Structures are given as structure tokens and as C-alpha cells.
Amino acid sequence: MLSGSLGVTSQNLTVIDVRQFTEDVIDGVPDPSLVDDVPAVRSTAGLRFAWAASRPVGVTLLLEGSYGETPRRDKAESWEYGMGGSVDFDAGAAWNVPIGIALAYRQTSLPVVTTTDNGNVSETVLRLAYNGKPDFLIALDVMGVLDRENLEADSVWAGGAAFSLRYYF
Image 1 (spheres, rainbow, N blue to C red):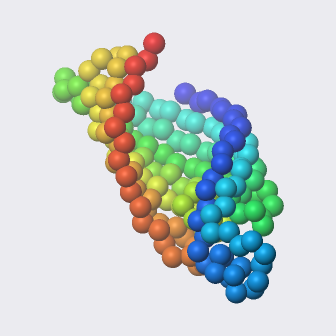
Image 2: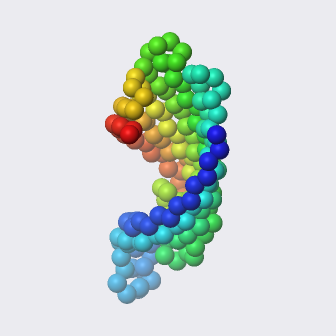
């Protein structure tokens, strides 16, 4: 299955930049600010490809392009990309156990973790889910930002978890 998507997002980002604040104080910039609220509007277009390799195994691929404002006020609009893939296994289809497992990887050039606008962010997600009902899902997602390929900033290692309940109707 192949699908396309178009989207526009508008969000406010809160940027805390101690280094820039210190430089502004040293340079005598009037009203230096440690915290900056930055509005950002971006448009996105993407393609997604899904393939059922077998009854219990599925593969999904993603390719996106994005244009819009960056989290840095001193930078103009930018073009960014995102690509990724996931593999999932449905133990219900294989062994009659209502558990699903998915492993996903995504790489994006959009600065999500730092405000420096070069280098890519690599993210992974491991999902464990109860999928015994076709219209109900209980899932635990364990997420990690593996690395930021950036010579101007230290690599960022971050992680988190999310618990979700979804009902489809």
C-alpha cells in the first residue's frame, strides 16, 4: 500500500539558550533574554509505503519533505527531510498470543532536540502492545534519540516512554 500526506503545523517552541544569553550580556545587547518563545509554521509532504511481508510480519517506510520556519529567529525558512522505517511482528497471527512488537527508526534533518540547524537526528522506538481486539490497542513505547550528527553541538542522548490506549471506530 502506498499513501501520501500533506500537512501544516503551527507550534510555539520555548528555547532556553544560556550561551546566547551570556554572549548578549557581554556584548551589551539591550534586554537580553534567557528564554525565547519562537512561533514556527511548517508545511510537510510525505509518502508512506506499507508491505505485509507475511501474515505476522509487516514493513513500513516513510519519506517526508518539509519547508518552514526554524527554531532559531536569526535563520530564514529552511527545507528539511525525514525518512524512516519500521518492522512489526504480530504474535497473534503467528502463535495466537495477542501481543505485537514493533521496532522503528527515523532520521530527520529538522532540529528537534537542539536549536543548531545542521546535523541529523536519529530516533528509535520499540513498541510492545496488546492487540487482542481489532479496534483496541494498549501499547508501551520506549523511545530514544540516538545521536545528533553535528560538529557545532555535543551529541544529545535522550529517551522516554509513552503509554497509550487507542480505540478505533
